[in-house]
Length: 475
Image (tube, rainbow, N blue to C red):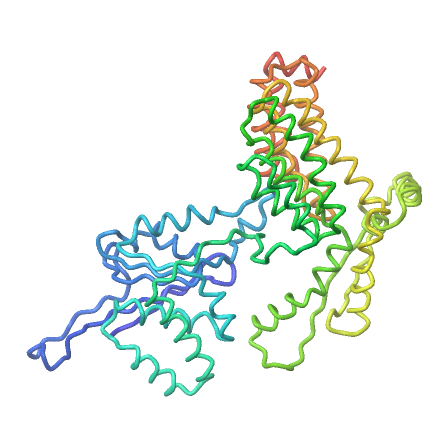
């Protein structure tokens, strides 16, 4: 056997590939001949390709290492998002189903299951589960007992690694195909206090029910049941517009998706909840490979500005402070740098007190601002639906621009308002044909998502202004 590795910059943009060649025939049976082994993998020459993450599995297909004539592909359905997915202004994630389909269609045999979840269930690391999957696939001339013997001989975390190995082995033997669960979706069952809301969802068009159900669960956890009820009340009007436009539930589905995200906006209360979420501490401990009870420090670096500080104040007070700060040129310039240890008593209590303001949220300045913006956006969708279902869907999709927290939210909101003033309003006023507005909105939104600072959007609108209809609208 010969092995080598191709080092990459795994901490930043790449990965490390490990390549192994095995000669299944003993040297004594080769008649004095010596096998010639390669140091790097050859395209189309791979019998077994293994990845601990779904995107890495798909990259094996793109690199030509996974082929339908020869390769067995083993990959985890779990995701660790790439940097370009994280920094996208919109939803930059690659579609889970497309990645899965790429592997299944290009491999001779595919074994896909959630190794990360299985590792956590057994208190093991994902590598041990991968090794079990390799042994269970039957693609190597090595019996499972030999792998177990090697784990014992290594002497490191033997019981833990054996649990993970056996879990992966059993999953491979049973060919457990765990269905992919998209990011942000929950496995938990609907609780009894959501029964009434879910009955309302069941009356909606089938195409939109799943998305609406997820929205109800998300907003109930974010705020309360009444807030989830407001979500469905708002969608009742969109459903009527969908019916009138004969959109077959498409407009309702897209609006339900974006409305759930907009109503669960990021504020200081939400950030505080995320900072002290027990699951976050467990995840960090697992990433650091800490033993139970082993201490560590977690420091949060915060830099709130005047608007963030005012977001939890009553609207009448916040407006006065923001107006005074704007007159003095303080907005966007004055910030308070903070370093808080979430693992200390004082730091934890600060975040805990902020998180407890959830009941106060409906009385806060940020809440009032967000609800007004949401109602305005929904009004534009309903108005556009009377002209064209596609027109209304494009406006619904513009909610992708409004996301995040602090400067990210401000830039996205500014880009959305620019598109609204320059394209959406003229189209609704009859100064721009709906068909042209559909293409214009899509182009402007794409430009804003590619460049959140607004430079691409300015160039896009300048190009659109060259058309006569846009010059009239701009004037």
